[in-house]
Length: 301
Image (cartoon, rainbow, N blue to C red):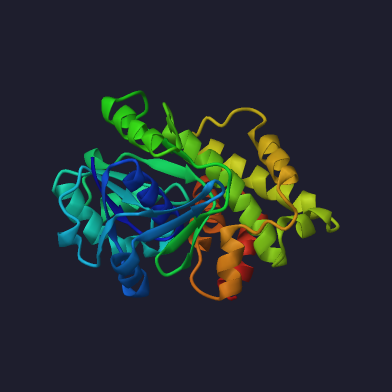
């Protein structure tokens, strides 16, 4: 399969490298020192099992990575508007568009930018990966999961075909029969974790052990769950407790990517995390004081 990757950072770079190693024709949209390093030395991929160099093509021009059978979109949510014209061009050329962004609004954002909805196959990635140097990405987590499914629910041949491609690359790939539910389940977890660690500016262990730290997490996840259900998302009973149990088992030094972005002082994904919970809460008449506080405090950081 010919695969274009828009967003060659940690997530996009890792999956792009793994897909190339599995024998697919992978082309990355990259720029600057990262692009120069990939062109010069290939894409170095580090993971818990070892390291390999992937032979991938890379360009800063979407014309040079087109056409494609599959376009993997792995930019940060705040860069989606900038990347959308390239994605629209790939989709117009026949590519299936697989967004692997945080939040629950990526498909809507792509559609608003001109990507035909019938070309979009919503998805999510469960992985910790980062670009650690120009031309070098690293997978930090033992897991590398991709979940994807049709926006309207149910099985499809194209979803199974795309999932099979990721399995060939070593990922655990699942076809979801309700991708909207799975996107919200991920949002509950990352928005809760990011709000707590972001407000405290500390890793998860420090927040858990602080007075009322777990109560902060509990209130944040219950707000998010109430908003999801008000929007018609069929969250399972006990989903909030499941999120709290996961947070309780995380390594104490662990920092969510949102906190790392805050510490670097650059752009972050507040708008699609606590910002989305707060916005959707107002639309549904649901109070979200924890996420409101996160938006107010962290917007001025």
